[in-house]
Amino acid sequence: MSEQESPSLFDRALSNLSASWREISVSAARTVGFSVSDEAVADAGRLQTQMRECLEARGGEVSARVRAASLGRAYLQLDTPGRALFLEILARDFAVEEAAVAEAIADYQAQEDEQGRIAAGLRLREVLEPPRVRLLRQFNSLPEGVKFLVDMRADLLPLLDRSPHLRALDQDLQDLLTSWFDTGFIDLRRITWDSSAALLEKLIAYEAVHEIRSWDDLRNRLDSDRRCYALFHPRMPNEPLAFVEVALVEGIAGNVQDLLDEKAPAADPAKADSAIFYSISNTQRGLRGITFGDFLIKMVVRELSQDLPRIKTFATLSPVPGLRVWLEGVDGESLDRFLGNDERSTIRKLGQSEDTAEALKNLLARENWHRHAKVAESLKDPLLRLAARYFMEKRGNGQPIDPVARFHLRNGARLERINWLGDTSAKGLRQSAGIMVNYRYLLDDIEKNHEAYMAKGTVAVSSDVRSLMRRVRDSGGGTLRRLGLG
Image 1 (spheres, rainbow, N blue to C red):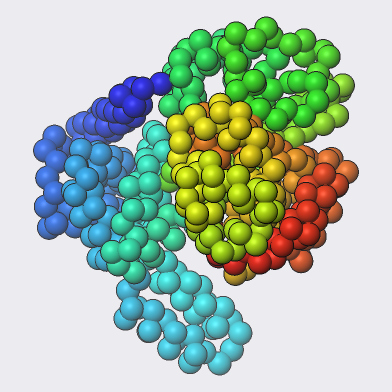
Image 2: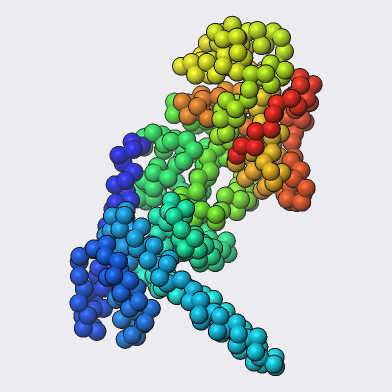
């Protein structure tokens, strides 16, 4: 997929939503005698007036739909600065009314009997809800209104540093969306080559881990030895919230290029004993902080266990997105103590520097370094040990610095294997020096691992990884300074 293709998809969606709300506005306006303007102007006074009219709710339900649709359509027609102004007005001018809160608190404190306190408490709870929340709920009744709010939050997220009012608005939106996107309302659907073209196009656009390069590439990922599943909300039936791509193979895969090879013949899914989750993507930026990946994985594991009982191994083939950044932060002195004499000498010679850290950086910056046998051989063992050391690093809260590790370990997976040159794409080399890892979901241990991780920060690791970590300690891995990245 080229970078030019994706915007057209979202431009069409915005245009369709705007047209839909235009029809609502015009149809309802005729009923109640309102006029509807096509003009979208980033005028603070006008926007504030429209918002107040929505909150006044004069004229009943039809009038409310007119105003909400007109206001939402005005937002969609604004440019980026205009939308920022809209959000600032909504956040600042329709926040909690402090005088009303103070009065409600005083009333609550003045009550002397239980019945009075209950009534005053309900009144206090009511005034603590900002008027903007009532306005946001009005969009929920419109076609695609939930999707509109999700996209509005996506517009809001880059603006949060501007003011505490905007951060409060973000919290309001997140609270609403969290309640609406409870996992009890979400359905799992399999995506196949026979799914609608519009849905397949979205799959291409939303793929965030391994770019789908063409329709042939997509068809390969939906072949008989592959599975793709997505989560959907009933109010956004044509918009996947998250999706996972799965390869049905024999044994645990360690190289993503092999999995994505379009020329490789399709394997027989009846012979597969392993399901490899090689791409998990959240699709809606506006749902940041509302995660579906853990729910998605557990539902897919259950689905595959029922459909293909021969499959007993469930594992990921995951990127290590922070490894290269971490490597570049390790100083030469620490690296010298970590490496053996021969390793240090070889890396300095090949990297053409007497500073080991600089030599390593030079080697990793060399184009197609992994195809040079001597370079790859000299780096393999040191980088695998460094990767193991990276997974031993923790943030201030005791969790691993790697975001993908935090996700899977929190879900109850085990760090199963560290794979040398598991992703030799430009992105894979740039992010993690080509290293990928397998996280394994052992059905009998998921809950136990999750509870140990959440309670004590205990990370479940396989015997192979534990052995590699022991080699790290034996080689002086404890001398690497704590970087606190992630």
